[in-house]
Length: 329
Length: 245
Image 1 (tube, helix red, strand yellow):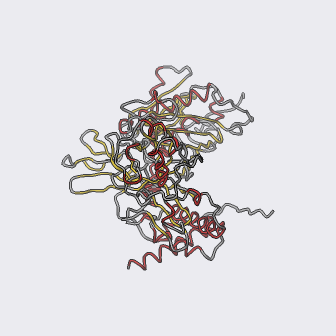
Image 2: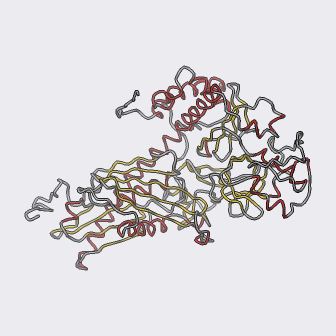
Image 3: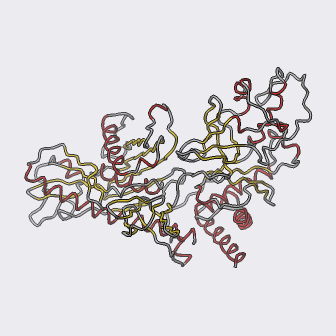
C-alpha cells in the first residue's frame, strides 16, 4: 500500500500573492467605531458610554445612518424566500424540527407540507400519527423559508418548490398491501397520496457544509451542471450534490429510482465537485454555479484526491479566479 | 529545589526574562474547518487549543434553556502528554470541572448573551502542553475562537498570571516558578474598559503587596491584548482581501 508523507513548509499567505489590499474599514471587538451619536446601530455593534463599539471582528458597513459590522462568518440567519437544505432532528406533535446551521432549529409545520393532488384540506389526526412515515429523524430535505419568528427561528415550507409540486402518483394500486419504510397503509385512502411528501426528501448524494456567508444569493439555487451532476446551493451553507435524474417526470414517484446504485462515472463527478467546493471554500471564494463549474474544469487535469493538497488547491482556485475576472471584465 | 533562584540579583528570572516580561506568544485562528470557531495559541511552552460551536439549539434537556439569554457551556481537558509525567485524567475530574466553571464565568461576562436567547454556545479547550499559565492560555485561545465564530463579545478577554518573589511582582509564570510555591494570581481582563472578568488566587499574600501584583498582571494582560489584537486584525484583513470587495 503506498503511503504519502508531507513535511511542513512555510507558505506565503494567498492574499499577498493577490497583491491587493482591502479598502474596507476593519474592526475588532472593543474598537470604537464612532463617537457621533447621530447614527443608528445595527448588527455587530453595541452602545457603551456615548460611543458605538464593535462586538464582532469584521468590516464596517454603513448605509445612510445605519452602521453595522459584518462578521467574517456567522450561523445562518433566515430570510423569507431562501432555499435551505436541512436535516430532521425531531418529530414533534404537528411539526418537524429541522437543523439548518442556524442559531435555533427551524420548524417545518405539518400544514406547510404539500398534499399532492392539490388537496387543500385540514390535516387530521391520522395525518399527525403518520408523520413519522413521511419524514424521520436523520432525513435530509430541501425547503423554502416561509417566515421568520421574532426570536430568529425560521419556519419552512415545501410547497411550490420544483420538488414539492404536486404530481399524480400514477401507478398506485389501492389494493396493494405492500408497506415499506416509505410506504403507506391502505387503510384510508387519503394517506395514499402522502408518499409524495417525500418529494422534498433528498435521495442519494453528498452533503457539503460550508459557511452561509460564502453562498451567493441568486435567482435560483437548483442547478443542473453540464458535467453530469446537479447541485442545490442552500442559503444556509448546506450544499447537496446528487446525480442528475434522467427522467424528470419519474422523479416525483421514483422511490425505487432513488435507491438504485449510482454509476461510477457519476460518483467520480460528484466526488470531484465536492473537492472543488471545499477548495473554493478554503480560499474564501463565493460559491455559485459559474464558480463551481470553472473550478471543476480547472481541476480536470488533476486526480480527484490531489485536489485537496494545498499547492494544487491554490493553483486551481487561482485559475478559477482569473477566469471569473476575465468573464466579468 | 534549594538554590534555585527565581529572581537573580540583576533582575533576571530562571528563563532569562525580566520581571514584567511575557513569554513569546504565537496564535492562529481558524485551525479547524468543521467547527464554528477555533484557535490555537502558544505562550512560551504552554500550548492550548480552543474550539467553539454555536450558538445552536440546546441539545439534551430543553429545560436548561434560558428564555432571555444564551447558555455558555465550557469544557476543559488536558492531554495526557501535557505534563512532564504522563498522566491519564478522567473526564469529569475536579480540576477540569473547576477550570470549566472558571472559563464559563469569564466568558459569560464577555459574550453578549442577550442577543441569542434559548440557544447554547459550547467552548471546548484542550491543553496540549502545560508549562505554567494554563488558565491564561485557555482564556486567550478561547477568546480568539469565539471571535472566529462570529459570536458578539463586549471586548477581548485577555488573561495572564502573576506572582510575587523577593518584593517584586513577576508576570506570566512558567511551571518552574509556579511549582516553587509562591503566591500566584490569575487575572482575566477586558482591556478597553479595564474591567476584570475573573481574578483568582489561592495562596497567602500580604494585603500590601496585592496592589502591585494586580498591577503587574493587568499590564501583562494589556500586553497580551496588543498581540492578540494584531493576530485578529491580520486574520480579518486576509479574509477580507480573499473575499474581494
